[in-house]
Image (tube, rainbow, N blue to C red; front, side, top):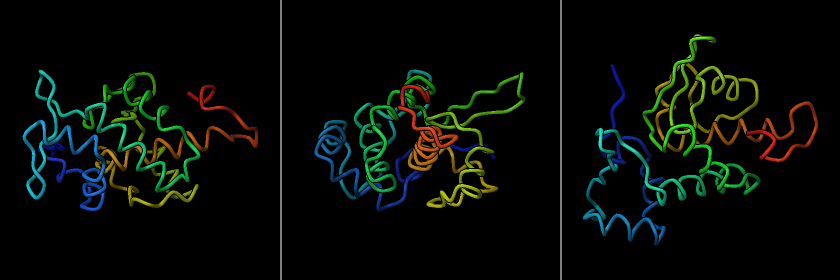
Length: 167
């Protein structure tokens, strides 16, 4: 069955949604769009009807994820830039590569195998993604594994690298 999200509540945990509401910028944006606390919050839609995160929403998702799981060791602006380039901030985006015969998923266009490897071998277990690739369509999950991969790349082969070199 295909993954589909209409509301933020369909793709984030309640504590993530509450933390998003605690951001003055997100609150202002949502209230201006006619949303209200205690009611389901609609995801924005592009002209083709596909859900996407606004720049404000993407900023807070990146900041919350980095603060919560990476002790501010990764620049949230790097996460935002990658999400913009890879998917236009669309959580349901996919891309099939004919050469590798693999499909990337989500905001940061991750391979499910990469997320599984980060969870099983590298210890990134905040989300139980192994064997459940549909979780990569959830914004916080995708950003978490995308940031974990950037962190791994930044010190691959025990050589320190900047985020610019990794991307």
